[in-house]
Image (cartoon, rainbow, N blue to C red; front, side, top):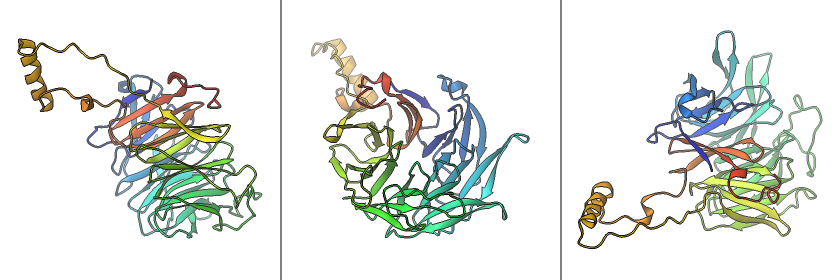
Length: 378
């Protein structure tokens, strides 16, 4: 069963969260311009989590947080068009921000560290993606621009080789770009694409709605991207590069806004349905398996005899509590989350966490959800 931690007032909610390398600390944005860092996060009692730092350098809502396991640096981006890289100073016990030169004139919407921790990419409403790296001579983070988009860039995702970047945009396109920086990366690794200079497009595919999420599998052989039309598409780049074609899956539920691979055969998508969706790769390709939280058939309580005192009491209690004459099946949600899931983060083999606008942070472990772990490649 998932474990829920009610961290933030549900009136405010959580816009995003991120974990440190050993998952003992968690950075959370309570849907405003601050970032709160909690410690002792392995304790199952959320009351024992320690609020260590509250950082408020941004002027507007923090839209994304990422914590590099390589460098222990935190990067945040915000609707105020800025990004900050936070470094911990042990002597002073403070997190100090570093200046980032983004050069965008619209909101920053998503940010991701490259797996090697040397660069990070920012999705923005300015139709471009700044790829930032550190310049020691000037002691700041500079950016190189990827400008091939026709509308707002909603999501970014790094390939495990740290040189290829996937983007999802509201122009109904998922694209892959070369993010090879000659002064930073030693040898170019272009996967199965032709080697290209920084910012050159390697591949693209269309969707029937905004591309809300993009994610690479652990070894980088598969890319998944979801559309606002309640679809998800999987692309296998094992043998083909520019000619690779997506496998599209349409589902009945609400759109996926964020997702990740738990293995090469298992993908979890979260979003407006408040219930993570599980997709698996079988012999004939990818397929939708189930929602992680299945409805439990509750035993109906014996109905009170009409005209009895118990029936009258139940009638007035329902009017007081719910404003209606009788209890309906829809009075109580069947999901742990009670609102939109805004962020999902990997926690370990077969484990991940989600946060949402209900103020909850939820930890999920696949081995507790009655699923075939072998079929998931876990």
